[in-house]
Amino acid sequence: MNKKTTVALLMLLASATANSQKIIVKDKDMNCGKIEYSKPATVTFKMKNKGSKQLIIDDVKVSCGCLKAEYPKQVVQADQDFEIKLTYDARQMGHFFKEAAVYSNGSKTPIYLTMKGIVVEEVTDYSGEYPYKIGDLRVDKTDLEFDDVNKGDRPSIVLHLINDGTKVLQPNIMHLPPYLEVASSVEYLRPGHQGKLTVTLNSDKLNEYGITQTSVYLANNPGDKVSAENELTAAAVLLPQFAQLTETQRLNAPAIKLSANNIKVDFSQKDKHTEKIEIMNTGKSNLQISSIHMFSKALKLTLGKRELKPAEKTTLKVTVEKEPFVKARTKPRILMITNDPNKPKIELKVEE
Image 1 (cartoon, rainbow, N blue to C red):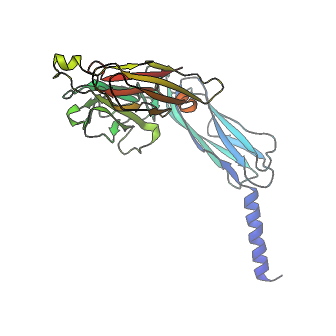
Image 2 (image 1 turned 90 degrees about the horizontal axis):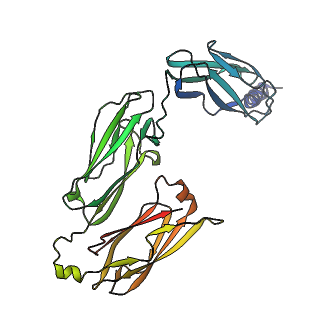
Image 3 (image 1 turned 120 degrees about the vertical axis):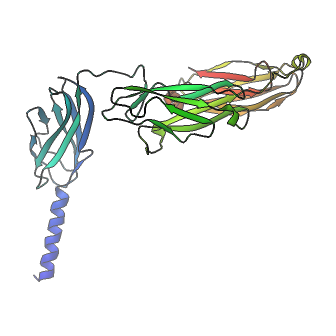
């Protein structure tokens, strides 16, 4: 056998050995966040034997007596999933960082698993008062809705938040449009502390009457990335102006009438619900539906006509899709803006 052949065989053997000894860990570092004093916390490490041979876990050595490990005592077959659990007794207040070394026939060196967190006297559940979680922040709302705004108004909405993590945060709102301003009650928000972000609408900077909607993003810290997870919806409804109308003009104004003021959905044995609502102009001049808006991705609309003569009718067809409806964070609704001075805004609620 020549030298080249010998080297090639050795390389193949080394490659085969490496492939037969590969252990995959989904996440080697686990953060427990806050845990309550003297209430043990357990984390589970998802692992897989990606080699071509049987895997045997010889031992899992922990960094202290406060940590216990559970691991498979039986053979782990090739391409089989398995778990290793670490439990910390939480008998010492403050931050902790614990480590475990996994010894097996699948690796010459141990695989290290870590768990960290902070032990506090009591863990407070803020999910009721602050139901929405964005990173380490909990907030009381994810929709900023400025309803029934007149030109010149400067209404404000307060976003209440709390730091539910273990590090100091600098909460702020990113991607603000020109017509929105934000002021924070605190520059730095410590763990367990509450704060407020006040969002103010400058209605003079809205370009048109009706509904203006955009997405803004709540950052835990400056420089956070924009994603669906930290998205807030901001919507403003700027009402048409009718104060200048004379009594005669009001008597001859259009008037909108709907066959239903809400939609009751029924998803029994189907993924969609369709409803038809009749719209009629019972006034004395042409009715204009200047804008129509859906406050949910679960809704699809078809409107026959946007302008109706006196006594004329049209149909609004509403289709509600089950999956996005169930997942919606707020109740879906439909908003229409009209030139009816008595009903410039029509709201249709969609509910089960």
